[in-house]
Length: 195
Image (cartoon, rainbow, N blue to C red; front, side):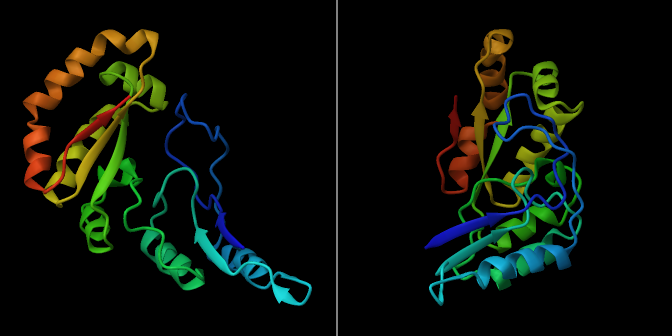
């Protein structure tokens, strides 16, 4: 049996109203506790045989790489995994960290990430409100620039809701002003924006 084990070791900086996972208190789980939990799954046997033939471990399930020791945790997960690394090609990254850690985007590129999904719920006021954090929209705009500079294509997810429908034209103009289609094409990818 193949399985993924996710432990929300540090939580999330946001309280998104559209999050399907819900809002929980941010935890602080030690790497020792995470390793112990992983070993319980690795060693689980049924009928004398290992039950899980392929195991994949994640140190998060809300905000990827939110913890300051994200590189250490990524290495730890890869060492615990019984399958090839889950990260390359995976389109989620910490927007919060992208806006604050100059070494994060180059690291993502180094480990094989070529595209990152960012979520917008309209312009600044609505995005900040629905993300549950003031400054979220500015972080997203900054992250888009950082990603492109690092050679990583931004992929935009937008949520159509009654309060923000009138803002989609503004976002379209903003993307045009930022020349996102052209800049992402220069990275060898097609700019994707979806609802």
